[in-house]
Image (cartoon, rainbow, N blue to C red; front, side, top):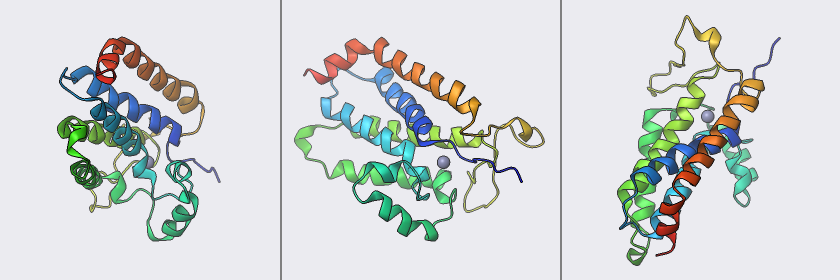
Length: 196
Ligand SMILES: [Zn+2]
């Protein structure tokens, strides 16, 4: 039996999520934004790119937090991989959680909430978009359990087997190049945002 690795790896999701989430912010950033807004955008984009796979015990996100591996193992049997987390409902839930966390931050940090919410939603959506190109597809319209993918059936033979050469030699390097280009082309903006 052929065993497909059916989801993209964490490193690919993280890089794509940062490129899209932080990239959107850098392109649309206004001079009045405070440094904390940039840091919140990076944090929320980073988490948003990995959280959809938090329902998998082996996911990268569980290795990035203390005791995460144990928590991941405990929660694993209760959550079927690629369920609500890979849907538009999941994007909405994550955005509400980020909003609640941002409201709890000290007001003197002067975080601009709106751009952080947009960046985190974009990073989360980038994860779903990347997974949509894989063999399994995603239940984007959960609770409707049907999986959708790109390209749609009957052209699904062109979808990506992840963890293989296409992801490792093409998607991952391209995402890194995109992220670096965005950082360097917006370097002046980043400096102005941080050195306030
Ligand atoms: Zn995923």
